[in-house]
Length: 157
Image 1 (cartoon, rainbow, N blue to C red):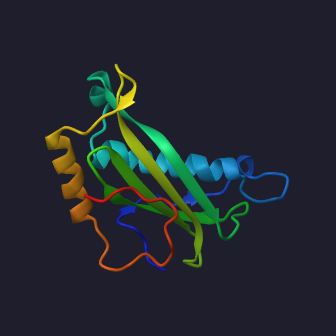
Image 2: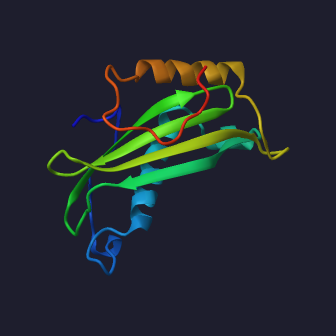
């Protein structure tokens, strides 16, 4: 299995992450995905607090998580992410969690819409921001197809 371009730090499953089934609770999958891709969102795509203060942000429009293999107490998790697609109003991120055997354990997809916070409606990115997003997407694109089907789609530019 391969990793996606944005690599996050390895995470170890702790007791508080486990549920009554003695494996990682689904809430922690979502929390982990959200925290990891948020770093990509802030650090690589510059959706900073200043951007939000300027009156713009993104809202999650749809999420999808597939649980393929369980994680148990002490297991090591290797997350990575990809900005899979972008258009003038939306972003589509894909994330994966690999286990210690380099097996695909979970797949995450999310679609974000660009929002004017004053109007509370979806609006296009500025030309400069869209250019930066598309340049990042091009710089980090995969040289092979994903080894799994995507469930979420947005219109391509």
